Image 1 (cartoon, rainbow, N blue to C red):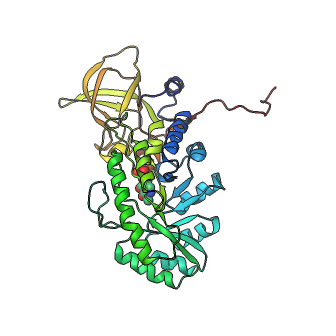
Image 2: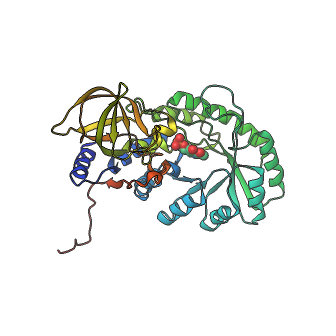
Image 3: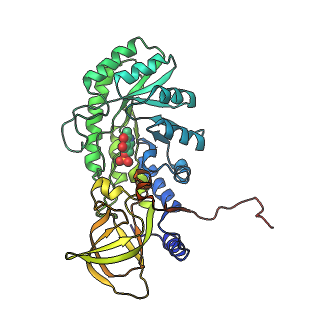
Length: 392
Ligand SMILES: Cc1ncc(COP(=O)(O)O)c(C=O)c1O
């Protein structure tokens, strides 16, 4: 995905103002993408945005009209979302919920609590409060599409689920509503995702009928994990195919999905400039202002972050060929792109890393080496306002 003109213009302004590195978010682009996802999922599944991907207030507000709700994974995310969007529907997931987090969930009101273990359910029951829960399942579903290890800290195997069923017998205030799963991540192939959804449904619905027959209208939350292809940013997840496949499962259960990365990655850019170009033992390195303490995504996932050179410096030696793009940290792991090919790269060039709208700043170790933080910019169309502007 190429930066929109407004992103290029903002980057140029920030460079002239010496305000780099900077995160630049394209909110009209984000809204357009979220609207397309919503249209593809209409009638097939509810869409809850996984806040962990990018919790910035501007992003949550921009997404609000295009999602059915928000999935949070900590008391911090819950309080943040409630503070910004008091009326939003919220589901609360995540392992190791503390007593204080459960109390906060009950106080602030979450629509669904995703129970991760029998211990967590017992902790919830002990509060004596009413709650609507999904049991997070980690069934062993053979076949294509599953990426989560069968054994993991997340969710429950059939033994854990059975233990929950026993606890629920003596817990009239806790209303089970269905099953939650999140069994894959970064799955670019909508067909494989749809196949997995089919297998989850084929397992979960008979399980619910057998173990929790009191649930009249079962719910299945299929989690997130729709992929973003960092090697080929133009290869978008096929939302229409996924929506059509989930529609085919419809009628059997109320479906919900929780995409994070695939909603916000595409419309965030990390913009910076080249500080140094050097050759070291036969390899070229371009040292950029900032680095993986701002954008840890390529290190966390082990990929090359895609980038565009937005403008070239007017003078100086130019490098054409292979180069490794690194940041300013004193660690060889501070690599943003290991396999870059450039044409005429110079010190002072302006560079924008794409797909930086998800698991980027909020995933990064900001304080290492005490470099300055980036600035943040949320580009938007001018809003019509009935308020008189100052000085009029
Ligand atoms: C329970 C749950 N739901 C949704 C997500 C969002 O996943 P993604 O950003 O890959 O769509 C995650 C990610 O870790 C998760 O753990």
